Image 1 (tube, rainbow, N blue to C red):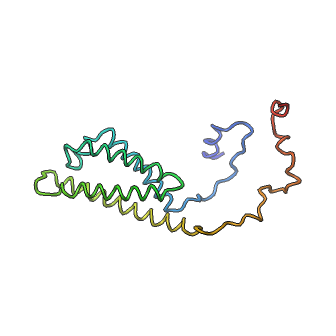
Image 2 (image 1 turned 90 degrees about the vertical axis):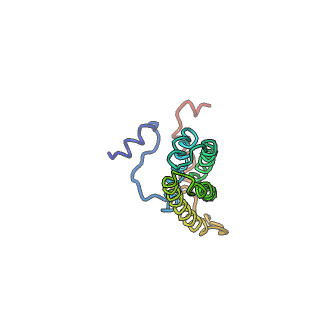
Image 3 (image 1 turned 60 degrees about the horizontal axis):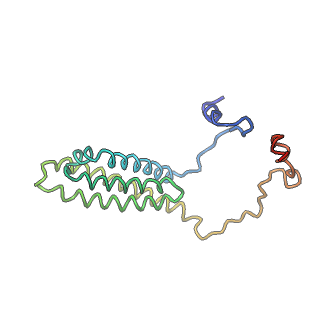
Length: 182
């Protein structure tokens, strides 16, 4: 018995179906990237909300803790839809937030900031994440646009592999005695 079967058996009732075999994921590479960025957004948002001083010191932006907390709330709000089926909404929000982050960091690159080296590294990190957000957004839009405007035809599917007559009454035979009496 493989590890996946053992792990899934932990939360299963005795009558639940078992996993016979696993196959490739239906998630595209863009979906997986979007999901990773969503988790990153939640983690970064939590750090920005709970420990803004750490972020401001690391980026050379001391004194901007309230602003970083607000940006953390924005990251949390963008992370949730990025993990959903509507990941393009969360990714668009993340890209807009990245632009705001870049606009916040650029003035701190001036000679007046003795920590401008840290600010430059923060700007490179935000730029890298922005590029990943854009790549994920393009890929998600490309995959999602294939079926846009197209009506799916499921008329040849019954959902009943043995046919309707063989499936009639099956649920009654698999119910516990107490449920049949009710």
